Structure formats: C-alpha cells, structure tokens
Image 1 (tube, rainbow, N blue to C red):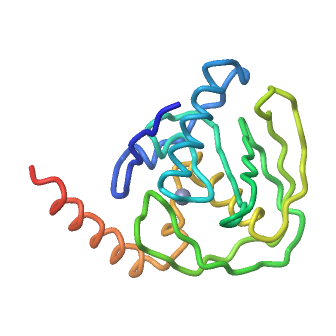
Image 2 (spheres, rainbow, N blue to C red; image 1 turned 120 degrees about the horizontal axis):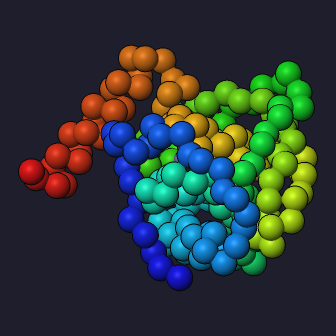
Length: 172
Ligand code: ZN
C-alpha cells in the first residue's frame, strides 16, 4: 500500500468523467488499498479514484468515528438511485477542496448498486451520512465537485482562493 498525492481544485483532472472498470481484480484491489490508506492519512471519510489522478469508477468510504474499529467500504462501478424526494442538508468538505465547508442539499436516502472488494455485485440502502457521502463521491466520478452545487458567486470565490493558495504553495 502507498499514500498517493491528492489532487486539489482547480485542476482539469477533477472535471474528468471516470470510466467503468471491467472487474475488481488484484490491480483494482491494489488501487482500493492505496485509496484507503491515502484517505486515512489525510484524514477523510471518502475518496474517489480521480482524486489521486486515476479516472476509474472506484470509491472508498469509512464513516467510523475516532476510537471505533475501521469500517472500510469499497465501491466499484456504483450506480445510485435516490429513494426519496426528501432532501437533507449537510455541511460538506472535500479533500480536493481543502479547508472549505459549505452546506449542500441532497436526497436523504438512496440505493447503491456496486461491485465490492471481492467483485461481488451488491445493492445497499443508504441513509444519513452514508447517503450524503456516497452521493458526494459519486459526483467525483462525473467530474463534479461539491462546490459545483453552490451558487456561482460562492463557487468562483472558493476556486479563486484555492488557485491563489496553490500559486503560493507551488511557485512556477
Ligand atoms: Zn470530495
């Protein structure tokens, strides 16, 4: 396993639509392992492959709290269907949008169909934080960031600040 570099916005790679994988084989499992280690080190609760520069439809999530046993979840080729009209608002953050947290409204529950770590096809019902998190990660696979759900003014303000911070960190 290895910790990979997380791409931060603004970056054209984060706007890419990720491609499905054929099946969860050893190479995909190695990717999932790296993603999990990278996410734990950050630390974060969810990570999509494109955030480490790999445009594949792979997501890892772990919602365990501090002091709890890790509960890693692996999703390949996830397909999400909202299962309610009820919307909930969570203050979201993103490892690719460091240090910004904003309220985002999303369907409260959803159903996810996916391949797991063993390449088994599974379907689960999600609510609460898991529903929000999986929808946030799913957006990454379509090249969408949580700031894209904000008003245009707010989004451009956030991206401008991020671009500026990047310039300071990595002088040309
Ligand atoms: Zn994110």
